[in-house]
Image 1 (cartoon, rainbow, N blue to C red):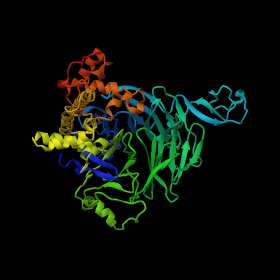
Image 2: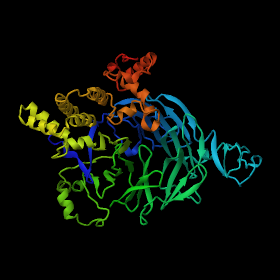
Image 3: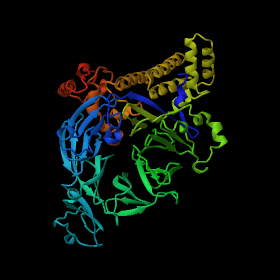
Image 4: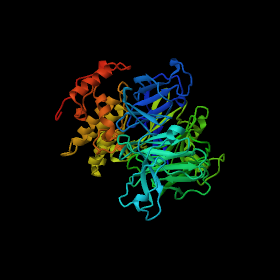
Length: 604
């Protein structure tokens, strides 16, 4: 507690970021993550790895191995991969694993590597857009190459009419790249073929393939692309050197983001935020543009001194925060940039003195000396006293309120410090929650300073606010000792308030018991307090906010010892519970000995 802010890194005047370890990974990987296909489910979900995917040997011993791990690295299931060459892995909102092959086939497995079903991105119904002359009657609609058509428009007098056909393009040209995305319709899949054509489906449970318009003159793969959602319509944004193309249902158009620097250069990477509302673009001059995914408003920009193509770029935002930031990684380098003239630069062990690089967007070019003002404001950042190290290959997993960082040996979480925690723990803070925490500590020491702190809070009539601050901050803390300290302070403050409603305090204690239980490495779900109510499934069914992620993993969670959250498993039948017990008992991690009877409580 005395060095609580030691790992805080400032980004601008009001925002701080910290990175802490969730788990020491138990999977004992021999391969680098760069040599594997990796997919991690959000909300602290499982991790899928495909090993030996690049090997061409036909020996059974050299076959790729598909493995599913918990977030702590415990093996849940594994199978040798006997099907076709995989291009991409991804997770659905209900936490089924999607395995996308280069022939367009998508195989779906559950959490235990059990095959469920498959579908193809190259066969079935494909809706393509054809341009019609104005006023053309329905009977004269142009047909597809196989002589078939089907109009959605009743009048059939518009320029754009959708026709049903079966495509052979995916089977002939194969899949070059693929992405799994989530919309209000469900989990979708988008593919790019070797003919540089895009196809997608917005809901794999109601398969309707949509072939996107062709990009005129495209003779090479786009440097980067992403799937966006605008006005309930799914579109594809792709970059070819310095040009951005937007593919909707009917047309291909060139777009220019508002406020984009004329000297920005060619696009190298793009990233869509967790809620699909924001977009970030990285160019070969080190310029980062951040704005709304509608491409109608610019939020901020940043000029980086690193011009090489990044390995990954993801958003790192906290709900209801005014700070906008992206995390960009290269080989063993990580940078956090946002709506500030500064960035947080986390280097490798080979470059320890560059721990925190403060690069000004209006300042000197690369290689120039750091100003005296910056030196005086952040002296420790320039001496390397506070150092974050990325000493091995890492993989970023965007979350609702931060970014998970996976490596062979560790699993970490990078996030913005919530306001409640800042108010209490910031150095020299005089916030009511900070004073109440100090009062409780002095009370334990039997010091009269406790009374002085309490009187100061009471004189300002801020004691209820102080208690609420401590309760809220306890939820954002990962370490149980810090949680207990804050809750003790809240309990101490409640004693001096008449008729303080206990519901928030009791509920927080219950929620933290649940969260601490499932964060245990043997269960391995590092859910945060911000993610918890959405993962719980109370938000009304939008897969993008986790309502669909729940029952499968909720039932897994409550197969283990702690049963405090029995309200979560009301939908799990007794038969389903017994089946879950038998599966876990036979799991590679040997988890059967920890199973408990199905939780029962009010309403179950």
